[in-house]
Image (cartoon, rainbow, N blue to C red; front, side, top):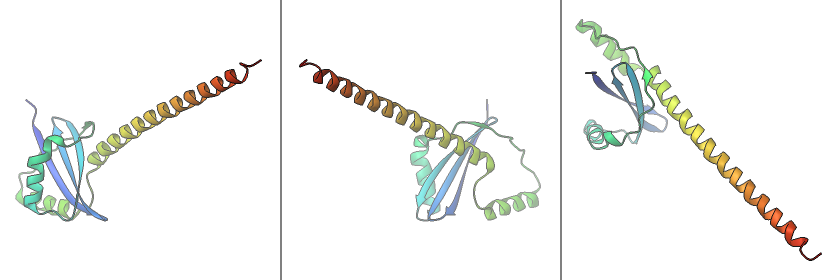
Length: 138
């Protein structure tokens, strides 16, 4: 059975507070971006996750190198301090979110292309119909 872990990073990115939820299933990482607006309290973040976890839209899974945790407490403390001082999100999460954005972009392009094609066909049919009506009296 694969191990599933989740990690929520909340940071301030002008002008909103943003949360990035990373989910690691086995060797695959997927991420979801949450916009909080005002600075959320811990209990608000916990309540949000408990209430809305199943509604989150996660990005396509990306292969992630899962690291074993160090047992040295000083090293763990240094890593925790480094993570709290870092701004932004992990590169794997960024890649996963970028993939999600690209997929949505391609879907929007396809829908727009189909809409333009349908409009072009409709205008062509109207033009042909008008031409036929003009020649009807001869």
